[in-house]
Length: 159
Image 1 (cartoon, rainbow, N blue to C red):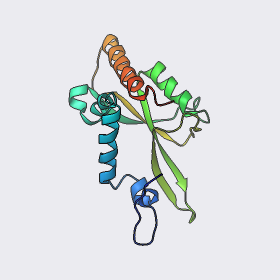
Image 2: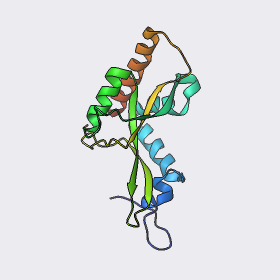
Image 3: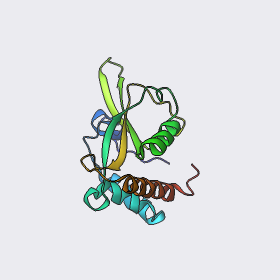
Image 4: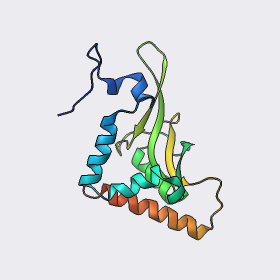
């Protein structure tokens, strides 16, 4: 059963423009993170990489979708970015038209692996800080560390 938060008009707030646009943070998000951490302690490492960039040496960037990956699955993008660039794809930034033909931007975190990636999408990636100039060996270690964290956090979820 999905529990939603309704506004006075009965609309699910999770489907509103401000929520989908990332302008609202609800306590239910924090509750979900805490619960996920309790039932899957390995996810805490991934959360640390995202929330504590100074300690982990990683941060989040937005990158364009390469033309060769457009119209392919998110799984293909995920695999290609990790293998070829040593960065972890964690979501998509997408633009669409609403029923009033207005542009609406939204973020898809942890998209389904079969989701088709559009050429107009941008990709949120977890990577080493761009200003750093690490050696190839440290890039490989960091990429490996990101891969291990993601594999550990998704182990046993049926993906």
